[in-house]
Image (cartoon, rainbow, N blue to C red; front, side, top):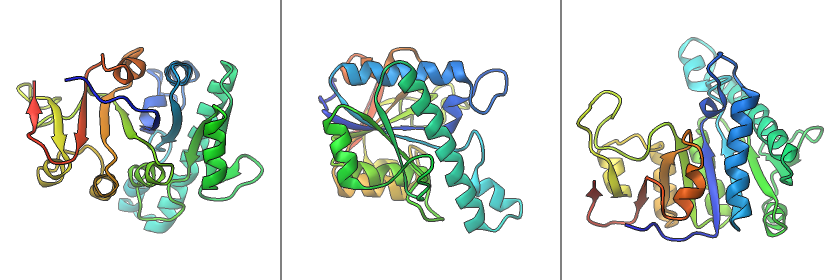
Length: 245
């Protein structure tokens, strides 16, 4: 199956994508490689928004489970996403990609506040826009923040870069016989708890008809390949007959 062509996409990356083998929370070499993937997509003519999680630095839900008050822990996690956004911005600008960071928590000394129309203008000018600090409120994940920004920016698709090459009917790291879907419906993802994104993010994409493309960002050149319809991925979209390899 050839994936549909998209013009404007939101790329959701986990914070762990920026980590290296040496245990660095933000590995400059790994971040530079990810920036190169984004540049290749931008140079191919796509308009890109980016959301980066903060799990490589601080994970609010885990901290809350260890005794930090949940809202405080979530705000700390939002600040971690700003650090990651600045790291990705720096890596992009070092390779000549004009980039803006917009934060849902205002911090004018380091980035712009989130303003939808300004973000749209940046995209029209060919800039990459990185959205940080989630939705600006606790109790929401960066997955939900990514889905919200994708809807606000009228993105054609939400691309989720992970460490696996799509959506499986079981965890492929635990079940060797797990089967990867070519396409799968939002309802199947929710009913079978397939762990693509959290339920609120899936529901938001479903309600706004935003397909979710799940692919392996750790494979060099894979983002551009998937955009061309050549890479391996799974598309989560409206009701259909679910198809596996």
